[in-house]
Length: 390
Image (tube, rainbow, N blue to C red; front, side, top):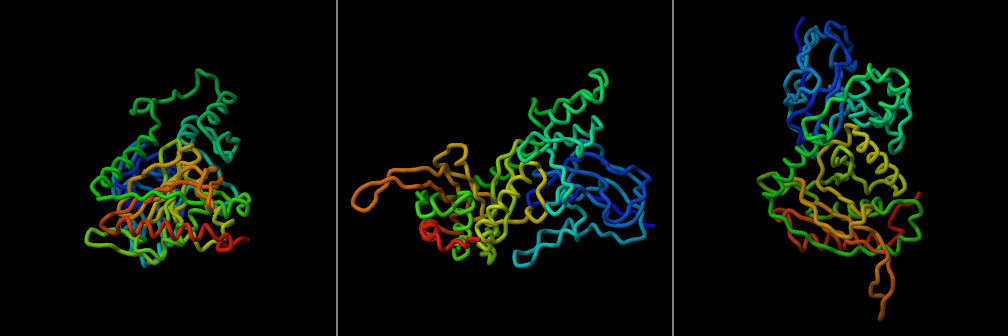
């Protein structure tokens, strides 16, 4: 029987290392292909690592809180099967190639939207539950969408153990900041440092949303803007990524949606959001945002993107400029949607508007390209019949 390394997987293009969280199997345990062996934390989310083969877990290398480089072993399996983990270390496939199905990977997201027994919990709550021996499935979360928080776990322990018997909470090495947020800020630091080397330009425009104000119903403004933006981007030379040697224009539109979470910004990706009816897109955006806030983003939303949408309107921001997320060619910043005094005919009136800023990689396009793209977005927003309503 051969020893097969179980390695720290690469689950995003920017991931260089991961933090080992906990073992679900013990040394000497027999495992089947697909069994969850352990849990690791990437820059963005916590992931469960599955065994790729039938075998025996013969050596545990990583321990909780160990930081392990991508591709380095975290354990070894004894098996008659061939090494099936090599594919995890390959570079991402070309844009034209379809992404691998989740079943082909050695890791799967902790939360899968198709499962009915989902336990939604923030990463720190999951770790605290392991420390205190609390079953997360037995808790009712007080966070958004029923997400279990650390306080929910610790409140449950007050009914199980006396204060003297509790495991003391270990402070982080980041001056009190949550460890997961510290990891996220390191990832942001790498991205923004790389972004600073790129020649960038930004074009601002007020988008008029009055035509959709009555028709949208319960549909969120972000969904309407994302759908119009993605459709306009499909016909633009800015739907591209910079390869280092030139601009690579994509046929698909892959939009990363930046979500503000308690452990830092997370940007799950939606491919071709303009192809969904608007109500369905609104539901999808809500689900991926919930996954991001709980720290559990499905694999299919951790793919490469050509653009990122940042919406700070709900935080009361009217206008802002966002840096590019290389190698993406564009970034769209969306401000608050509100009534504004605007020219109407020969006079003035009140219109529903928001200000957006489109940042472009000047190697890929220029301000005129950005202006044309925003004009195309506005044309779609001016016609409620353009949106496919359910």
